[in-house]
Every structure is written in structure tokens, then in C-alpha cells.
Amino acid sequence: STVGVIGLGYIGLPTAAILASKDIKVVGVDVNPATVEAVNRGDVPFVEPDLATYVAGAVTQGTLRATSTPEPADAFIIAVPTPFAGDHEPDLSYIKAAAEAVAPQLRGGELLILESTSPPRATEKMADWILATRPDLSLDGADGTAQIHVAHCPERVLPGRVMIELVTNDRIVGGLTPEAAERAKELYAVFCQGEILLTDAVTAEMAKLVENSFRDVNIAFANELSLIADKLDIDVWELIRLANHHPRVNILQPGPGVGGHCIAVDPWFIVDADPEQARLIRTAREVNDAKPAWVIEQVRKAVAGIETPTVAALGLAFKADIDDLRESPARKIVADLADVLPGSDVVVVEPHVDALPPELANRRNVRLANLADAVDEADTLVLLVDHQEFKSFDLAGAGAEDLRVVDTRGIW
Ligand code: SAJ
Image 1 (cartoon, rainbow, N blue to C red):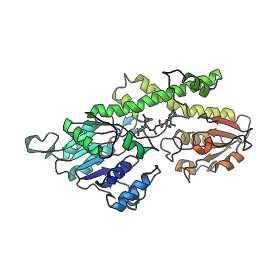
Image 2: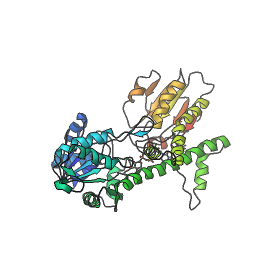
Image 3: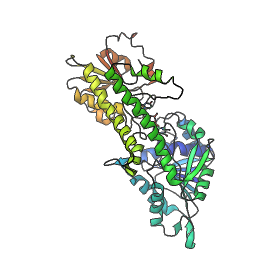
Image 4: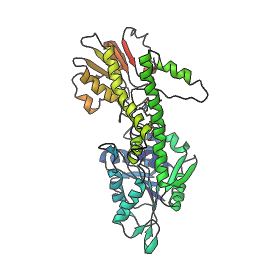
């Protein structure tokens, strides 16, 4: 059988590559010509452990290739972005564009799976968009129409562990019809060794949103504690470590805020679906979103008395040991610091990138440096990401005892 994967990003490409490694003919589709070219060369346009090996292998084997427009296939997996627009309203335009690009290729009998994290009822909308342009198709095959099978199967892989978790995680498959769910299960069973759990599409959509909201609420709890602990002048890391000795308590870690493309976004889809009831979920988002401003305040206090401070900002990624800068609180903090501390220098250390992102690159007082140089020049350190390189850095050994330090991850 052949599978078309629409969207070759952080989820689509790994999924395409793993299917192709199981001898399924996969055609990856992406609107970005650079991505298409990279994949066809056997290259990966972003960092994800082991993914490059899979892509290169599948392209060499001839089971994976990329193109810019969909072609006929037995199944389509749609893995395009679902950002939010305006006042945190979900933007389904990428799903709509994908649906309209796939629709003309359908002959009837195909399986269509939406993998993008989606607000409730987005899968239904996707089917509506397809059927609006194809009156000869339907979900039930009534009145002489040809049937298509539509399901939602949210991805739940953790960036940095994608190739492992694709195989080992359990999957939720929600069909617009029970038959669609069954068919989707068969496809995922090709590579997924976890349990594949069947439900309806809207429950599957909510399950994904609820998982990430659960994590967001729990991180917000930790972040709120860090503010309270600071007021009480106690060490929040010690506080959490001690409380976690209770057999039923498992508090997460405070940080500079919540980043990434999922946890900072998905809870808003629930808030948007039911603004009146989703009070805790909304507040958690607000607590986490307020954390970067608090960190900046901490740095401001730390540099008090230094006329032209040099601040070394350690880390730009949204979490440890990855190169992904999307929705990164660290990145926002560095940009704001450069504004808030005029006349200061902000020296950024991010071992996983070789250039500053555009909004930082053109700042006169921001530059990229290696860790040793940055620590050498700085009078103040702000630790934003708990990368391995920073954790193993010996502050005292580097003669950095008299640096002023704001450690947002508690590694020192
Ligand atoms: N963070 C903290 N404290 C913690 C844990 C995380 O501040 O104790 C921060 C991180 O630094 C980061 C953010 O939260 O900025 C999110 O990181 P993460 O590792 O919690 O999650 P993601 O965004 O990399 O991946 C999440 C995962 N969801 C859950 O764990 C419920 C992953 O399984 C999903 O597939 C992914 O979102 C997604 O694509 O939705």
C-alpha cells in the first residue's frame, strides 16, 4: 500500500520515515521546497536523534520520497501545524489547505488520518472541507457515493525521543466512523508496538489536549511555588525535593516559563471550546506565561549597581538538549533583557545552534558566544535551559564564584 504524508515537520517526517522503514511506499508532501529537496537528498532539516538515519535509509531504499503536491495513495496522514490566531483561537487554515489539496486525489476507499493536534471537532471539519469539493464521496457510501474513512490519531511523541516513542507509546485512534478507527489502527500497527486504543474522533481530539493541559497545570503549580518560595526566601528546589518524598506527591520543576509548540498552545484550544468552565486551565496558562517577566525582574535585581552589565544568557532552546527554539521562553527573555537593560551586553550561549534567531541577530547588544568566553566576560549569569553542557559546567572551577547568578532551572 502507499501512504501520503502531508506536512514533513517534526511529526510528519518521523512518521513518514518510520512507515517507509517498514517497506510501505511513502510520499511525503510539503509546501516548503527546501524541505522537499532536503528529504529527497536523504537529509533532515532539523535535529532529532536517529531520524536522519531513518530518512537516509528509506530514501536510499526507494520507499520514501518527497514532493510539493499530493498524489493518489491508499492512505493520507495529515500532520500540519495548528497554531492559534488572535485571542488564542485555533487557526485551522493549514488543515483546510491540506484537505483541499488532498481532495482532488481521492478515488474512494481511502483512509484519511488527521494527526495535527486539533481543537474539538476539527476532524469533522476536515471531512466537511473534503466532501464540500467532492459530492461524489461520503463517510457512509450512501446514494451511490464512494466511501472515505476519516480518523484522528493525535501524536504524543516527546521531541528528542521521537523515534523511540513512535514505536513504544500507546496511541489513541478516534474515527468519524468505527470502521475508520479500525482501518487507522491497522496502519499504525505497522510500526507502533504500544496499545492502540479506539474511540470517536472528538474524544481523541480532547485526549491529546487534556494530556498537555495536565502537564501545563502541573508545571504552573511548580512555577507558582517558585514565586512563593522566593518571597519566603526559601529554596524552591529543596522544597519540591522534600515534598516529593511523599508517596502520592510528584511536583514538576519550575523553569523560565513553558515553551514548545504544544503545551503552551493546546490548553488554549480547551479554553476556546469552553471559556466559562476552563478556569484552572486558563489560569495555568497565565501563570506559565507570566514567568519570563518574573525572570527578567530577577535579572534586573541581580545586576543592580553595575553600570554597564554584561549578562551571559545560557540557553535559547525551549528545553534541554534540543535545538528547537520554537515558542521558547528563553528566547523571549533574551530579547526582553536586551530592551530592559539598555547599555548592557547580552552574551548568548546556545551550543545547539550556530546563529542567533532573526529577532536577536540584529540587536546591537546581543551576540552569540561559547560558554567559556561568555562566562569570562560576564558579570551576571542567567541560566535558562538545563542543557547537559551547562549542567556539567563547574562554576567554581571556572573562577566564577563572584558572578551574580539567576538559575531558573535549579541546576547549580
Ligand atoms: N517544563 C518545565 N518543567 C517541567 C517540565 C517541563 O518547566 O517539569 C517546560 C520545558 O522546559 C518546556 C515545556 O515545559 O519549555 C514543555 O516541555 P515538555 O518536555 O513537558 O513537553 P514537550 O512540549 O516537549 O512535549 C509535550 C509532551 N506532552 C506531555 O508530556 C503530556 C509530548 O508527549 C507531546 O507529544 C508533545 O508535547 C506534543 O507534541 O504535544
